[in-house]
Amino acid sequence: MAAFDEALAAATAVAGRVPKGLYIDGEWRPARGGKVLTVEDPATGSAIAEVADASVVDALDALAAADRAQEAWAATPPRERGEVLRRAFELMIARRDDLAGLMTLEMGKAFAESQAEVSYAAEFFRWFAEEAVRIDGGYLAAPGGGSRVVVMRQPVGPCLLITPWNFPMAMGTRKIGPALAAGCTVVVKPAKQTPLSMLALVAILEEAGVPRGVVNLFTTARSGEASSALLDDARLRKVSFTGSTEVGRTLLGQAANRVLRTSMELGGNAPFLVFDDADLDLAIEGAVQAKMRNVGEACTAANRFYVQRSVADRFVSGLAERLGGLRVGHGLDPETEVGPLIDGNAVKSVGELVADATAAGAKVVTGGEAIAGDGYFFAPTVLSGVPGGARTIREEIFGPVAPVVAFDEEDEAVRMANASEYGLASYVFTENLARGLRVSERLESGMVGLNQGIISNPAAPFGGVKQSGLGREGGRVGIDEYLNIKYTAVRASW
Image (cartoon, rainbow, N blue to C red; front, side, top):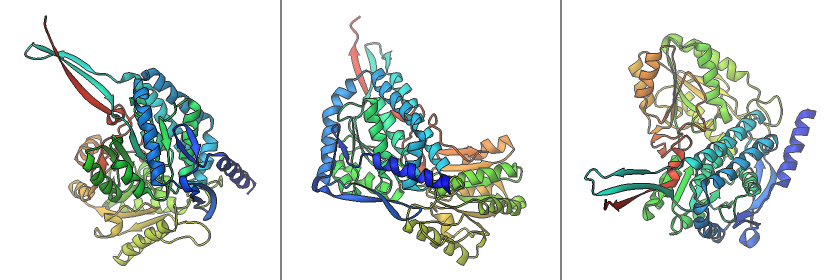
């Protein structure tokens, strides 16, 4: 208990030091009218901080600052832009434990997971620090010989970056890193549930030497109103959003009015396929990783488990034993493996999905209910015999629930896996390499984990197909989302 008390005190102290205002044009300032919004600890339901609650005018001030800074930042040598990101990476790594404690306090995930996220988030800054100097173009003789084709890539311009609450730091660096490397200025709007991590990140960027107006941030309880105003403003050139498909559709509709560049990383309903030739111990461990990372509150989380019938009972038994044995508690407790869900609505939603599945005939093997007491906890859950029409199969669960469905043949598994409007991530476990590659090619998703339950990597392109989004973040292509291609025809007089 002493270790938990010390960790809680340390995280609370960090939260106290984080700036609580808006960051606009290189200055921290309160919201117009002095409004604030409350941030709470989801493990207890108690308030931990108050941050500025921006108005639409505040949001427009942030865009105006980004617009003023755009020309100079675009003209800044790529090496200098990269060095800012490199310094920010080093500061994040040096302060990893402080940032992790802060993240756990406001989001709930276990401290070890928060540490891993800070490291992962920092890597985007390092990766794009290196990509800043690799923005290239092209030169060639036109096929007819009368001219030369010159191709250059230039920054899109001021960008609105909207980040979610579930990965409050990594989703920020995954957008800010390529934008700054490309020469774009940004306006960042974090989720109202977890703004402290982004406030701390922007303070680090300020310390790393980001020029005035290049990075701006506003927090608000009126996200839709503020975002709409920015999307309607001619100074904004791009919007990048991570969140639900429903909200993504709304933003795409608004962006269409001005033909804005968009990047959308939206919802998921990831299938997890286990064939009878899989290493079952490896598959179960991969399932725990893919399902329980971030308490299941991840767009890449395994959502539907399709297991070949001959090994289904063993898989269910092994997975239930692993999930049922996980320790649930406050994320700052060193013994905790599973933290709380983000709020009471999340607990209610997950409970309704489990109730729907059991009413349709599914069996609760372990868990299946909310945990009484303070905070927003739900027991890690395994469901067997889940019918195909259950909501846990059709909808994104966003919680620690694993519904298992048995299948007989490969074609049946692929058909069920692809029977979704979503296509972000998929997972395949088999010891047959030919089958693994064949099934990976057939799955309708932007990413596949073959015999592994964690797929996110700063060096890899992250994104989905169908209604899971547009564009890619990370990897060599991540910076392309923030660059326009310009072609110049040069008359050849020689």
